[in-house]
Image 1: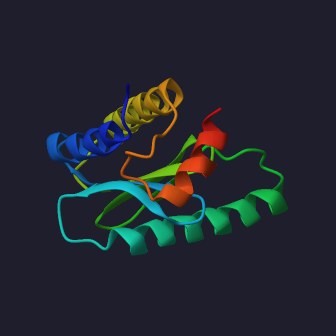
Image 2 (image 1 turned 135 degrees about the vertical axis):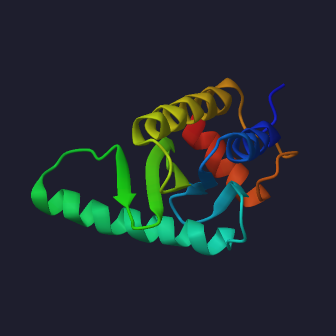
Image 3 (image 1 turned 180 degrees about the vertical axis):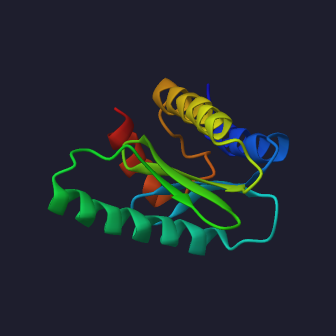
Length: 145
């Protein structure tokens, strides 16, 4: 039995063991933080909500310019990078990295993390013993199947 706790542990390991990665957040499309890890103090709920706001703006941009499906969003700032990628049926992964990261390596690491999360999500439905709020479990089970 694969527990959803493994996703939380996977994200924590990713942030703790990957140099120049500052944070990773798995959020639902409604802005709820499902799993997260940070190398510094950050409000996970606020970060998840901001992620959804960015996705909303990009979605409007995409529709108006007929860009088709947008698979990810990459933002480059003076002090670092933000990458948002679709993870699985209405779940998004936000990753923050500092300016010292090598971008190509950054993309590969995120792709590996996303693929692992997708495997975990597809392997087993969420159970009531998960770290997720019970009202989300039914919705997530429907999305995974």
